Image (cartoon, rainbow, N blue to C red):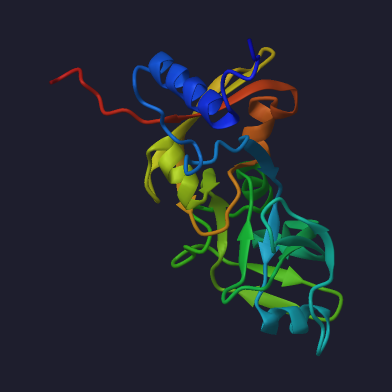
Length: 234
């Protein structure tokens, strides 16, 4: 008897029928499933963002930022340039890194201990929300800029693309929880704000105080958790 009992198409059909049966009759395609990217949690040290005008004042006419190191998000980088921050009563922080590219408004992002060191009561804000915030003085090698506002403590947040919103079942602006398992320092950080946009990699940003508190460098597990509505009164 011939061993060629079935042609290739028949074999593929039989295999598919078996798979469908094992899945309870549903052969769901994964081709368009949301990407389950690995979660990256980064510590964002104190830094500042500058306008084109302020770059020229601080570093000289015609000067632009010099990329030194690419950040995790495409198109963003740490620049070679640094500035000194001067707060009330002449308290200062030297060599604060400038991040690029430039922005419409200059902004300084500090951890809580940085703000205390400078003597500035910096509010927790989403990056870009600087209306009514304290200011400071920026000192560069070629000039000085006095900011009337722009000093914040950046709210912890998670960057997501459209596929990640589907993956986690959340919307832009929602708050999530971040569970971190680390030797002796495990914790859950609440109020991690979702910041969504196109062509964005999945990444949580914490400041240095938060990263040190949970010993992030030694973390064995990090997990984003959606806030579920409380059912205790239902």
